[in-house]
Length: 279
Image (cartoon, rainbow, N blue to C red):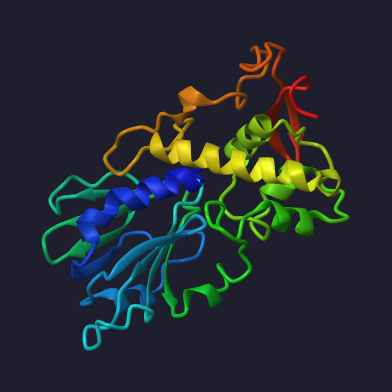
């Protein structure tokens, strides 16, 4: 599943081709995504793209009305890549690929195609303000923003018995820290993934915040992690998989101490850790 670094890589890849361009048409070839693609997406036709940004794993394309282009908060298109979705920039006469479900055609001749084999993604319209949209209003802070810090995590975790890994992956606590990066951040911070969230000290949460940022920023720099489905909009793979310390390395030596990396299922997700380094 594409996680925050992969979504950020996608955003950076498509922005140069789409920003300030007018949308000529939207073609829906298969509306049967997680949320059926509705007629509301056609509101974007005839509008220019004023801004592209990300909230958690959602890509937001701001399209102010043509008669009032200064209204950047009017609404736009919302895309979620789901389990296997991807976006690519191409020419309008490029051959269609299997599972190309939605196409955005720009007046400059560029196309943006949304491909999703498992059809668990989202391509929909949002009305301003975006933060009140049902899919966004319960989300926690961004992990690379100032609101995500040690005191915040320590306060939210008070009295909780849930495993700290599940706590870190809760989008109501912080967005975009999926299974891969939670395992990596906890290893870097030296925190055992099954430790109760309420039993992690403020100092250790400050270490975990720094580790989470470091892992995510490095993954973004390397273009994401290719484990199964993900490639960037230019069809290049992400290379962060080559930097993974514990994820999918069960039985191999820990890169810090040499002890054997172990695997355990926590919250129905495979978790990788070192019992020697993580307490």
